[in-house]
Length: 240
Image 1 (cartoon, rainbow, N blue to C red):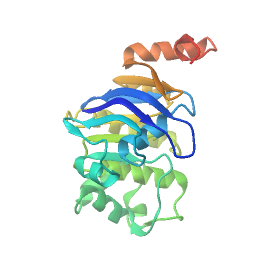
Image 2 (cartoon, rainbow, N blue to C red; image 1 turned 45 degrees about the horizontal axis):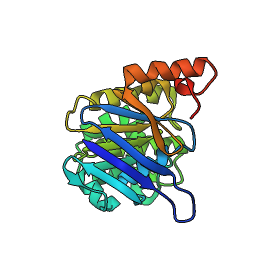
Image 3 (tube, rainbow, N blue to C red; image 1 turned 60 degrees about the horizontal axis):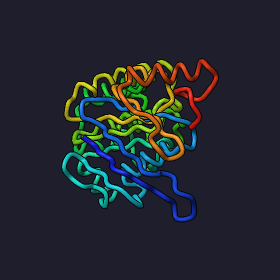
Image 4 (cartoon, helix red, strand yellow; image 1 turned 120 degrees about the horizontal axis):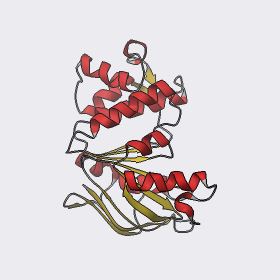
């Protein structure tokens, strides 16, 4: 379980972005964080992964305080992160990347399963370099596959996984999330506006202006978001 207590973050040259976030991401559940653009969702994901250091508050992974740990130490403890804009690696093949993510050689059958989940043909991609020759959508799918390949993952964070993904591949990704939810040792955190992801969420948290405005079971929060959208106003029927 991942627990955030009054987490704050402020860039060196700007205003405070996260203004006291309290959030729990439970193992065996999918938590979707949504809300208006610029509200702090991606900043929250980067703070959890250790890309940005908090300026206040506490982050716990089960009973371990990871607030001061860097991105490498957090990865070793099982925090996995898929960027909104994936990184490219010149000289590293897709096969290499998946092996690195898994911490050892992956059986061919498992590689095929991973690639199928993100809608890519193994034989067409496995020996290609993870570089500029790949489109934005291709690189996004490959990064998602690498996160799914992590065997020690305890918290998996996906920042807008639907970006650059075609509908067929996205359907496969939904199936992958549904399967991951069955693993009671893993906690899933997804940043998304996508309605299909909100529909399968166990928990939904709405973040706006750096604060959690509302959170709770998906079955309770989603109808409020949909009603707010239909009425032409802000979600949950009020101004942020």
